[in-house]
Image 1: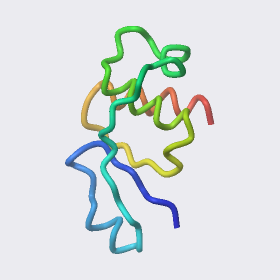
Image 2: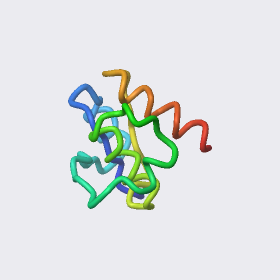
Image 3: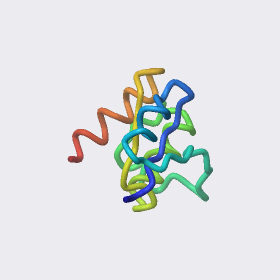
Amino acid sequence: MEKTYYVCKYTPLELLTAFGGECEILNNMPEGFDQADQIAHPNICGFGKSVLEAVLSGQVKELVLVNCCDTIRSVYDLLEDMG
């Protein structure tokens, strides 16, 4: 099973772990936002762009996003549009 990454303290880690998931927080800062800048609006904060960059680079296969802020909702919408 792949690691399941999360970005917010409101993520139900206990529930994911109960289903056998191995959870890890996604809090690394990439060298740049080359891929994220191509699909995201310039006003999305650096944190949102770092999440996008991690997904687009292939580092993250499983990601749980909760409805905690506008940036994460925008990241979700962008990722959903990409399939």
